[in-house]
Structure formats: structure tokens, C-alpha cells
Length: 396
Image (cartoon, rainbow, N blue to C red):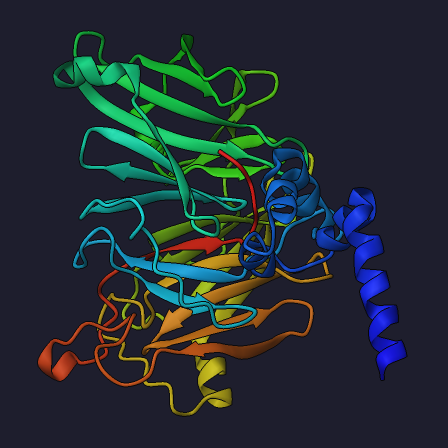
């Protein structure tokens, strides 16, 4: 026993004296373990806190060129306070007290992007947060000084930690003095400064492009609306592109809602319809060359009920029997998973397996995805935003 102890002590001393070897070992450990291991010694704290180590650790834990989310943050659109949401685990349960370290009563999430959250503060500022490390940076948009003259104001985040530790903030605004003219400001974390009005453009009002709901994919921020136009900003080349792109007609009914997202470098769109009884929605996939939307599949939640008979999809006239749709990446396959929340349960359709699976059950009480309205107990009236949470050490 004494000999074994001596060998272990010798091995530990060898590792501690060889910083390159210690770094290689730490790179292979889970993110949350490293947060705790900062307390081991000054040497470990210095290694784990080094921005270059944080960048390398994130790249080391990618899978086939992509990061995988650990959890979802579900936030009601209308009836919940800004900083209240439900945490839906995807890999393991993680009870993270989000935003308590910011010391503000109301923080509104605007976007999740590969481990960083873009949030809005009610102090007329924006916050870039890493919930894993509990660090944040406050930014003030230069246009806030002219806020009374702005009729439109949208902010989006672009961050790809597999390519660079730096991020950019895209701010699009319209002044009441020049209606219909949109301006784009750009902030770079690398320079710590804003470039103002680098692009000026116009968008057809009929296209109703949702500039507040940008999707970052393939180095571009994409915006989609309820028309036939798609807009994207190439972050590296700092150029804007508009494309006319009609959806294939698949249903003889008007659209009710669109859900825009991405999975493993591919854009997806889920469309629900305004019809007497709606448990169906269509999924469209963007061609990789951005040439067209392709219809992928029509999903029916009635099929999910066959698998999970406990689901009670309260569907009244012209209201869908579910509250929201989003897309997540599969661990290894290119095919996405489509996540739906209905009757307080989070279920998903796996395109690779062609099956419905249950991700999470929020349990008894007021359920995510159902609004208590007496006899319409399971009326899925409120819509929800889903923000992906990635555990990582990215620095700000």
C-alpha cells in the first residue's frame, strides 16, 4: 500500500510540474468540473482562466464540427416576467440560477448563440452573458441617445467559438426622420468598438421580416418573416443579402405561425396553419446552396398521442393543440430533431429514427404550453421562445 501511494504521489508531482501535460488533461474534462477545479491551486486557476485554454476547450468538445446544447430555456412570450423561464435538460439535469449574478430584477433574453446569451437590461443597455462561468459584459448601443427618434430597433448576436473566441453584435434601426430606411451598426468584441451605419437598406413592408428573431448559421445572421423574402448578413465579409424564396404550397389553409431555426448548418422552418382542428405542421428545409425551401415532412401530434396516450392536446377551433416548435441538433447525425411543447410535456420527433420521444415532463401544477381557461384547460394559447443553453468556458 505504501509503495502504491508513493507511485501515485510521484505521478501527481510529475503532472503538476509539467504544465503542458496538465493542460492536455484538463482540456478533456467536462466544463462544470473545470469551474470547480479552479479552486485546486493558483496554477490550475491560471490555466483554466486563460482565454486561449477556454477557446481550445470549446473546440475540443465539439462533435463533427458542431456544439451540442445541454438544455433549453423556455420563456413565455406574453404572460411571464422577463427573467422567468423553465430549464429543460437535454443531457443531464442542470439547476443553474441564471442571472442572479447580474444583480438586476428584470433581464430579458433576446438570443442564444453557441454558449453566449444576448440579453436586454432595463437600464437601457444590453448584456452578453455566459451562464456557465457567470460572467457578463454590459454594452450600450450608440443609438440609445437618439432613442426617441427610433421607430424600429433590433439587436442580434453572432458567435462561433469553433472558429474564433470573438463575437459581434448587429444592431438594425430605423429613424422616424427617415422612415423605411434601415441602418446597420456593428460591434466587435475584438476591437471593443462600434462601426456605425456600415450598411443602409430597405425591406418591403409586405414581407414582414422578423428582424428581432435572427438565426446564426454558417457565419451569417438570417432573418425570415411571413412573406417570400429571406435576409442575411455575412458577418465576416460584412455584407447584406436579400433573396426571394417562396415556400412550396402544401396546405389549403392560411398560415398561423412560423418557427425559424437551424440544425448542424442547415436552416429549417416549421409552419402551423389556421384551421378548425390543427395538430399538424409542415417542416421545410433550406437547400445548402440557398436556392430554395424544400418540403421535408408533415408532422401530426396525433401520432405522438399514440405513443404517449397521457397527452391531452386541447385543440379548439383555429388554435393549434401545442405551444411552440424549435429545432435541435442530433448528436452524430445530420438529421435534426424537432421539439414541441404540449400539455406540459416536452416531446421531440427524431427524423433519423422517424419516432416521437419524450424529452421532459414539467410535472404537476401550471404547465408550460397550456393556459388555464376553465373548460379550455389545455388550450395552447401562449407562444414560447426556446433558447439553447451550451456549457462552455467562452470568455467575454
